[in-house]
Structure formats: C-alpha cells, structure tokens
Amino acid sequence: MKRFNIALAQMTCTRANKEANIQKMEKYIQKAKAENASLIVFPELALTGYILRDQIYELAETIPGPTVMTMEKIAKRENIHIIFGMPELSEKTQAVIYNTAVLVAPKGYVGKYRKMHLPTHSVFEEKRYFRQGYKPTVFETELGKVGMLICYDAFFPEVSRILRLEGAQLLVCISASPAVRRHFFEILTVARAIENTVFLAYVNLVGLENGLQFWGGSRLIAPSGKILIQAKYNEEHMVVGTVDYSDIKPVEAFVPTLRDLRPEIFQMLQELSEKL
Amino acid sequence: MELTPEILKINPAATAERIKTFIKDMVKKTGTNGVVLGISGGIDSSTVAALSTLSLGSEKVIGLILPEDETYNETDIRHAKRVAEKFRFKTVEITITPVLEAYYKTIPIFDSMEKISRGNIKARARMIYLYYYANKLNLLVCGSSDKSETMMGYFTKWGDVAADIAPLMDLYKTQVRQLAKYIGVPDEIIAKPSSPNLWRGQLAEKELGIKYETLDLILYGLERFMSTKEIAKQLQLNKQLVEKIKKRWLRMEHKRQMPLSLKLTYRTVGKDFRLYHTQ
Image 1 (cartoon, one colour):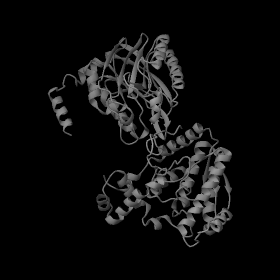
Image 2 (cartoon, chains in turn cyan, green):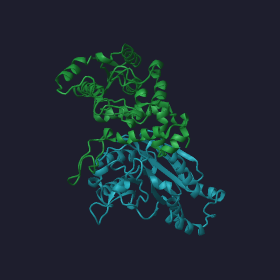
Image 3 (cartoon, rainbow over the protein chains, first blue to last red):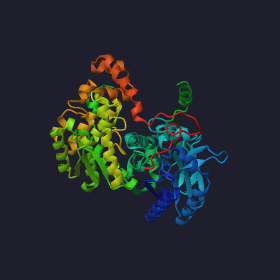
Image 4 (cartoon, rainbow over the protein chains, first blue to last red):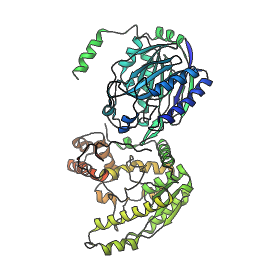
C-alpha cells in the first residue's frame, strides 16, 4: 500500500491498570477506523503508564502473551494495524524486562522492537528496570516497511539510520517525554526524518504521572521534514494524517543523503565511541 | 554558562498554566474537594493561593490566616486578605496564641529565650491546623515552599514545608516573583522583604546573609554542577561565601527526605522500596 492513513493517539494512561488502558485504546482504535486509518500508534508503555517503578515486576508480560492476543483480536476485528508500548517479560526468566514496542496487523502479531537506549539520568531510571534491546528491525507489512524506535532512541541517529538502510519507509517513534524535554524532540524527530528521507510518526504520552508532565504534541513528519499533522500539546488528542510513499522519491533525489553515505567513517565512529 | 539574571527568567504564562494543570490534576486524581493553604500575606503563599483559585475556582480553595501575638503584623494580614479578595477565595482567621502558650507551659524544658526551637513550634502548630482542615473537609494541603528556601533548608522540618503538594518547589524565589507579577499578585506583596515570621523582626535575606538575586544565581550554578570557584569568580563573590551556601544546601538534605532508615531486610522504606505516587 503506497498511501494510507495513520492515526496518532496520544493518551493519558491509568497507571498499572492494563484493562483500563486497553479499553481506552480500543475506543481510539474504533475512532481511528471511522477516519479510515490503516495504522494507529499509541505511546511508549501505553499499556501500563510510564512511571511504574517496582510495580513493573507485576505488570510485564511476554510477547506474544495475553495483551498481545487481545490486541490481535481487536486488530482483526477492526481490520487495522496497531503499534503500542508495553513492558515485556523475557520468556526465559522471571524478572528480565524490556521496554518494547509491538506491531500487530489484522492478520495477527507482526513483531516487536526492544528499546536500545534506556535513559538513566535526571528523572529517568530505565536501566534499573529494563534490559536493553540489541537490534533495530524493519517489518514488512501490508503498509510497507515499518521500523520502530522508542523515545530516547531518537537521540541516537544510528537507530533510525539502520532502520532506513534496512529499507524502512516509515519510522514510528513512540515516546514518554516530559515537558522540559519538548524542544529536544521537536528538533530531533524532524532531523531523523530529513537525514533519512523517510516518514516519521512520533506519538508521545500526555498527562501527569508522579509530577512529570508529558507534553503530547505527536506529529507525522514527511521525508522533507515538513510536519504534516500535529496533535495538541498537553491534552489527550488523536490526529489522522496521510502517509504517501510516493513523496519519498522527490525528496531522496533533492537531498540524497543515502546516496552520499560514507561507510568508511562508520568504523571510525565505532573506534572513537569505544574509547570515549 | 554565564550566571546573569537573564538565566533565571521564566515564561510566566506557560509556567502558570503548567502549575494550574498540576493542581487541578492532583485534586481530581485524589478525589479531594480542593485545597487548603496557610496564607501569610507573603509572596509565596499569595502566589500559590492565587494559582489554586485560577486552577480550581474560588469555591475549592480555603486560606487559613494563622497569626499569633508575638509576631502579629497588621500589614501581613491585610495583604493576605487583599489576595483573598482579589482572587476570591474564602479565608478563616484563627489566632494560634493559646495553643502556642499551652506548648510553652507544658514543655518541661521550654526555654523562651531560644528563638529557633520556639519559632518552630509556631510553624508546626500551623501545620496541625492545615491538616485538620484537610482531613475534615477532604482537602489537599497545598504548600508554598519555593526552591531557594527548600535548597537552603530554610524552613521548619515537618512545619511550613509539610504539605500534600508543593507547586512552587521547583521555582527559585526570583522566579516566583516573576510568576507573582504575571498573575497579578499586588506589587506591595511582591516588593516587601520575605520573612518566615517565627519571631519579631526576622528577615529571610538578613538571616541567610545574602540577597535572593545573588543566592538564586549561586543555587542555579550549583544545580548545574558548576564549581564554587567558578560561581564565585563569575559573581565576583568571596569563594568562602559560595562554599558556605553549598555546604548548607548539602547538609540540609535530611530536611527534604523521609527519615533515614537502616537497611535490615529485603526491601526497605526510603531506600529500595521504590514505589510511585499513585497520582
């Protein structure tokens, strides 16, 4: 499918209440379907809320698992693709958890991405609770090639670049970004789209958790860096925009960043970062 | 980084909006009927009371004016009432002198000449009134501590700092002044010297030994990991003064945390029992 509608559903979550959050997601899914969306995206850890601290051990689930099965049923019934965030429990252990984005299609579960860069500074304590992911992965779907990244990953251009080099046409970045960091994300999300000549959908959490105010402002960005649609700041809101892959080629020819890549400097990047 | 007054500038409109959202959200999530605040007629409590009414509406805010004989100041009471009139919230005035005297009389080791311990009784007595109203009327106690005094530990432990929410705690005093001006707190309240009023003639800047304009720049530098040497150099201050401020900030951490617990078992309150505010 070259052209389709995408719904960006920035929601507030009821913390540690998966049932309530799934119900809310289901309402947004129905609303998105009514607006002819083929894909709906929810924020990072939308299943549980972001600040969970020790309660995360009670909430994490395997993927596939009960929640993914529920989302598969909804996706099938509504004939829609869904991306959402949840804490993922490793199948092999009882307390190893990943901060994961899940992609479900009308035909069923497609795949997952485990957050590679876990912020553990300022108000963030993700490394205390999560194991990092190891691989950016692109998924072949009816909506083209889709790559996922999560929040702080956007600060590391390597993740988006790898996804793009694997052929991604659409990058989906789910996020839980508090208000003091808004200016970073407003710049970085546009930068990731431009430097990779790719569509980028950014969906942020909204509302207050533990004194942290998430700013919303979800947006769909064209490969040119143009913001095609943007949700409101600081309140629950869903917006629907159109992804048209035929828009990639003219930008790719106009700003040929992929043609001009210099692989020989990547080795240098590795060496220098190992010696930092 | 240059330590100039410019760096302390806030966007007062956006800040007021965020604080109003926070207050409203906390009242909603806790299922309470509103907030109760102690209002002294000073800038911090006037600002947070005004923001509370702008956020929740007049009906959901009660201001307690809690004077006592020793530090009774008609101007402060007039200021407290003026803010209440302007922002239309209800006030209750209760003289706490009889309660204080009961403490003075019944504490066997009470020393009327030692003003800090005596003054702290006043702040803690006010806390009891605020929490009575909160419990009885299902309200949140809304504190008015700012970042300058919180970092300095310039407050009474379990006294004026005791609250359920502290909407101004991440704003330095000079930033509260900007916010106060923006929301329309009367100029005479903004301009008058700050005082905890625990004894007659007590003035914050005199006691801290520094003007808030300078203190806030020092604290801003410390917050951003600047060395005391660099801060002193930039602000053309004596390095000892900056070091004294830094030491006080660090030494006062005990006033900002739950009591220090001893690790004895599997998960320990205040250490690795890491839970979140359900709100």
